[in-house]
Length: 555
Image (cartoon, helix red, strand yellow):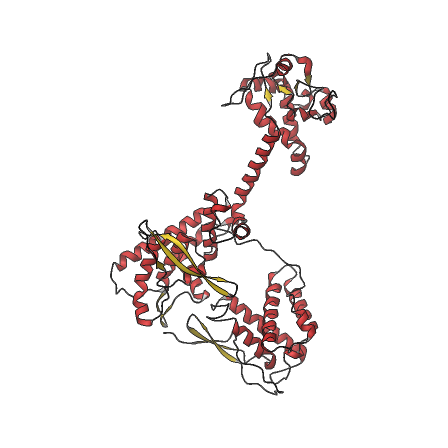
């Protein structure tokens, strides 16, 4: 079905190190299988083979179809590069060439520290490269020690308890695409799926599916289900079962968790090409001829340059076809967050599907956590940059509700003691004390009339005069605001706006934020435009229009 490939950049190993002294070791060449494709890899050019061999064997044990690195991906290439660089560094420090006898037992904790120091010097303290390099080296050394206990010295084993001395870095979770981008990707993928269905008709013996044809089907499936890319790529031909009269069917898939695979299932709707089951049924029909010829039960299988094979078993191959498809539909010309152009990434695509659901539910985790714990859903899917606006609005709404609960709405009245209301609202009756305060200027204090100067909610004990700041009236339930107070209120509002230039945002919000909000949302809307025009004429927007006592406090 496939032909093996030999690649120089990577290495795999098997076997154990001989117990006795070895003066020369043959070439280190290994073969590992990715998705049924054997890949021959070569480390024979590296010095210090007694050191390289067990590290390469460790890498082999975690790679390939039965390891944790199951694709010939950038991650695998990166691990091979890390091994190569560490072997070269260690050989230089140990003074060992191709025939050198230095092995794992000759490593020291100081050598590991010096290797890390060199990485820090090259990449800096904030780069993720140092963490990735050291994580690979430490992991391979641990596996090599497990394979031959006691090979590493006690000091080196102690050093393996942590990967790097740099402080842990917590990166931001992968962001979603903007919703319009997700919708454009979904439309393009479904359009291609419809076209493919029309081109192939209902024939059972259609031409073998190509990788380029399979890509939009995979993309559409992720858009419709929110499946993780690895789960969608790993579907089997018999993944649909248990149809119901209500139009649903069970979709079985396998999810990778740590070092194991877990069988999972979800109920998906049936119907046309725009439903998950309809899309999968099309893929099953189009790939069945290839399965009959080549055997196996992989869903994504078809014809390639090297014969019939399972698709998407190597990250590089999928990425190249994915980008070609995106370019053909000009999806790479769409605007991403930050002003850049979109680079299609299936991980972000899946995150975008989850994000759309999050936005639809208004950020309610109980409606969003399908397939995850609340903690994982919150940390990895809710707390992303695409949701900043939703979260900021939620905080603002919460603070507004808290403010409303803590502070009664401002009391506005006519100059003869009648109640006023905001547009669209209902005026609440005034108490007798509030009516008297509104009708008489004798109880005016600073910015309002006070219906209870000696029964202030801010006083330490009953009977004391109100100790609140001059603009505390704006937050006081005893305050009554009438048209005669508008000039002072307008001047104070203008003063608070001018203070934005003198104070930073946090200082201004702490000092004047609540007062400004009460003015603009609770007091000013109760008066007519004509009343505001008269007030502006009387105050001329000047701070001089403020009461003298208040002017003294402010200046």
